[in-house]
Amino acid sequence: MHKQIFVNLPIENMARSQAFFRALGYEFNPDFTNEQGACLVVGENLFVMLLVKDFYQTFTTKAIADARTTSEVLVCFSCDSREEVDALVAKAVAAGGTSPRPVQDLGFMYSHSFDDLDGHSWEFVHMVDASKALG
Image 1 (tube, rainbow, N blue to C red):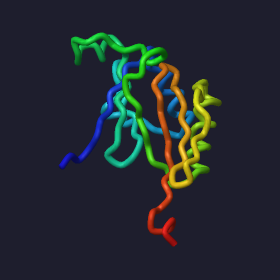
Image 2 (cartoon, rainbow, N blue to C red; image 1 turned 180 degrees about the vertical axis):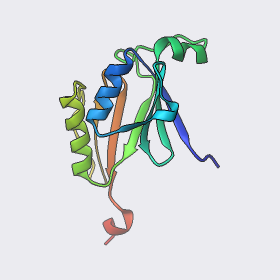
Image 3 (cartoon, rainbow, N blue to C red; image 1 turned 90 degrees about the horizontal axis):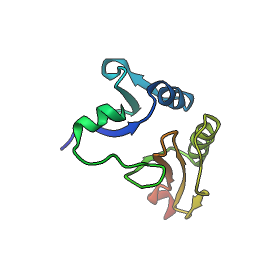
Image 4 (cartoon, helix red, strand yellow; image 1 turned 90 degrees about the vertical axis):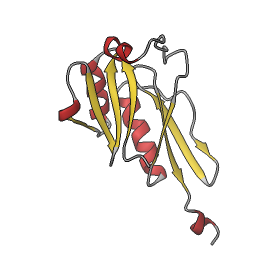
């Protein structure tokens, strides 16, 4: 099986994107970060490569989607609590992101999301432990 995941996203402005994600409490791996790409560490062996559009384009012959108007991917991360979900979205909005959808509370799953400065959608969920739910 696979050992790591690297999600690659095109961005407009490297400094602005790094500042945004640092405001959410994330860090970057300096070994894989330069002016063209930044390795955002989102968990153990979980990474998002933020690539400036010109550099991103070198990896594909397809047109780059405008994430503000087109859904290209939905990135979803688990959280340990509802409070963690809400705190991440609040930090994102405070740093300039938007929250276009309201919280979804399905009982067994609580989710909320934000769109980053380039329009990419990030969703955070807290799932009820099935063994606790069954009592």
